[in-house]
Image (cartoon, rainbow, N blue to C red; front, side, top):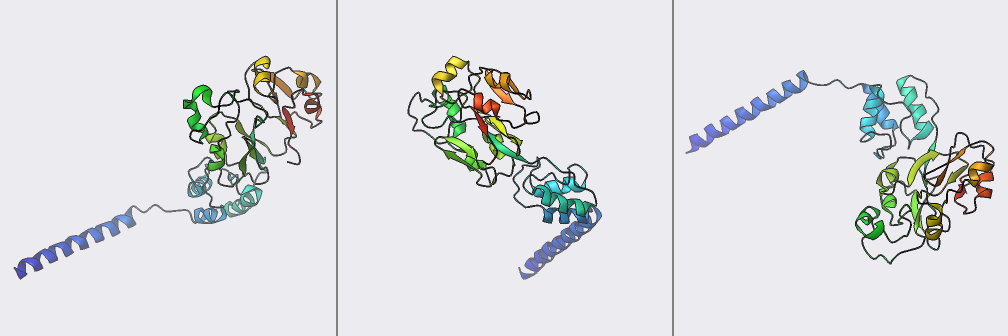
Length: 267
């Protein structure tokens, strides 16, 4: 009986020793050499793992930068400072990137956008696709105000104020998580220095928008006609401003009868 136990113990020990040696040799033989710069780049990154760079996390971005698959200033959270540090590690020059910020193209909050009914269900914008008319607001294109974007933002840079999402320009890191989660596609990344933008996404005809929201764009084209830089166009009954052409004169905002164009400077 005792001899059997000893034999079994010896066999198990021998098998364990063999497996350990095999794994050790395999680890050495098939080891993938890692560029030491990868650890340095990873240490320079902020570590938020927000995915705003387009990669799964900071480790993946570090590997991509070292592998030449991503720019040294690809991290939107770190900005120019982190880009400069990584450029030094990689021995290259960091090109200046355009700073961006999230923008919600809607102002239809409480007292501005009309309601069709009172909603008492789940407070999640993505679930409203399953309720009548896509939500209680009359405008089918406006912000539902239930804050899925707020929950998605890792930087506390977006909040629901008076029934509509509002971005804090200074806190926003342009990671894009709010853009991805918004079911109405109201949020986009725009140049930080953009002077004026149209805060509306309605594609309804003017008369319909006028009934649904007091600050909705009615596609009248007055802003386009008065813009001296030709920076405004009207498509799908809604005005759009090209930040690259905009000279920041503010004429469009002054002429807009619905006040759908907002000044971004100083926000």
